[in-house]
Image 1 (cartoon, rainbow, N blue to C red):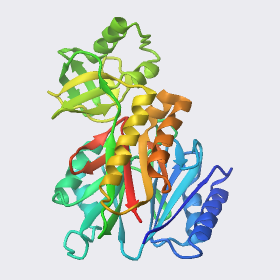
Image 2 (image 1 turned 180 degrees about the horizontal axis):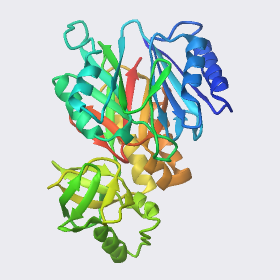
Image 3 (image 1 turned 180 degrees about the vertical axis):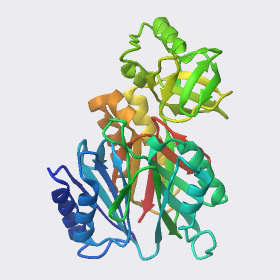
Image 4 (image 1 turned 30 degrees about the vertical axis):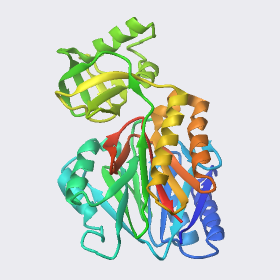
Length: 388
């Protein structure tokens, strides 16, 4: 059986926050050591001080996590805070891995992560899952997810996201033990004989005409239909009566993201800024030759997507009940919906009750699950559900 603990704090200092979180975990687990502890923390905290205080206070066997851009639990969403999920289950096996140098060599980084996995050659567990957290500002997140999938031979399902920094987009970190790393990724391997549910869904639909990506370099979208990328956004704004200010485009971008069409689904990319040459910097790679659409969504459709993702994950548990869930959604979704982001969390609460959840707003979301579109996403609800 799974025992879990969730704690949340907005304490003023990192050390105080760490002590509060550790005390809450210790109380919830009746003094037992957590097998794994996941930490999400605002960039306002000193990460080593926070992590060291948590470790000193509750001594988890394994601790991973990342910086974030909004933190939440079953109780309420917050910003400039920190939260943790502690897991304990003698019938599950947890392992942690760290990979550095994402910008230099994704294949090697994937191999370093997967080297920590103990389920590749083990017949003892029926189900293999892993939570992956990435320094998304290092770039190449989509490539890394593909390399991890190849390195595991498709034997694992994944969920996770890209670290944040309170929507500053300057520097993001992943946590392994009591240290914080940039240009890195961490993994929490979960081996079990009960299924772990993974759900992924977004509430966006195409709003404009299809366009061909005629030039791009990584996350820099250079041209659409052989014209500077910025022109497509400006023309669409004029057609739909929206305000598009090239000097302050983020509000428009958050409401009009790009959807990369693939096999009847749309993988989302959030535009972030306009460069002097008319190219657009996006939150993740946009492949040359792909067909893209400008997309639209509402607060209601985003909440419905979170509900569907959660229900899909719960259905994968078969006859087991959900115990605790880890939820990731995009910082762009929170910025776009504002206070109405609570509608998504309420949808999770309604679907999961009496199970609890915690998570964070991320710079991209990771999902690989059978029967669902996978890879590295933006503006997408991703949830991992741990059974009882």
